[in-house]
Amino acid sequence: MEKMNQALEKMKMLVGMDVEDEEVAPQQESSFAFMDDLNGNCTLSTKQRLYGFAVCLTTGIACTLLSMLVFFNPIKFGITFSFGNLLALGSTAFLIGPKRQVTMMLDPVRIYATAIYIASIIIALFCALYVRNKLLTLLSILLEFGALIWYSLSYVPFARSMVSKVMMACFDTEF
View 1: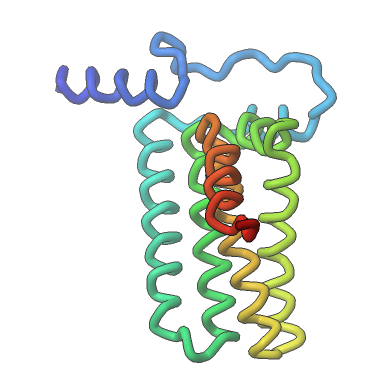
View 2 (view 1 turned 180 degrees about the vertical axis):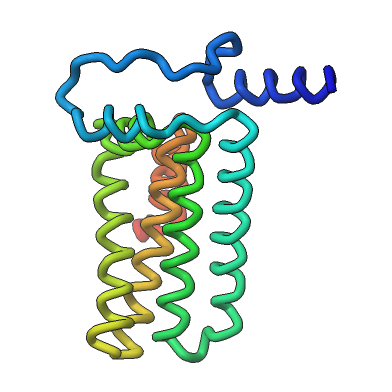
């Protein structure tokens, strides 16, 4: 049991939680009153957070991978792919909490990547569920995939600038 507690403490440190504090910190005054209330009501233990993260991430990845089975039906593909992305995105809220996740997503470094990523998910679902146009759904899924990559790169230091430089070098047409 002691090894399990040590492993949980190491996981707490990895996700940025205080090792001694299992209780929820008292709420502070801020402009995010809704997020403060939401965070105050999210009183999961570390073990529950890890289970929630694992279940959401596994389900999201499974939906994304299973969407490949219906690739030739872009409407079903768009729905399962987008749902998988939403689950995978929401899984990190279990680790770091919903307030911190929203704060990180709205960080000036990644606000545009976040906006484009969420908008592309909405556009893909709109094209798949409402418009029901296979070509538009496929194009919106391509946009969603590109936005997912760009959003993910925003969490790796200097990754977006490196990818930009590589792409510029690859597609430079001057001789």
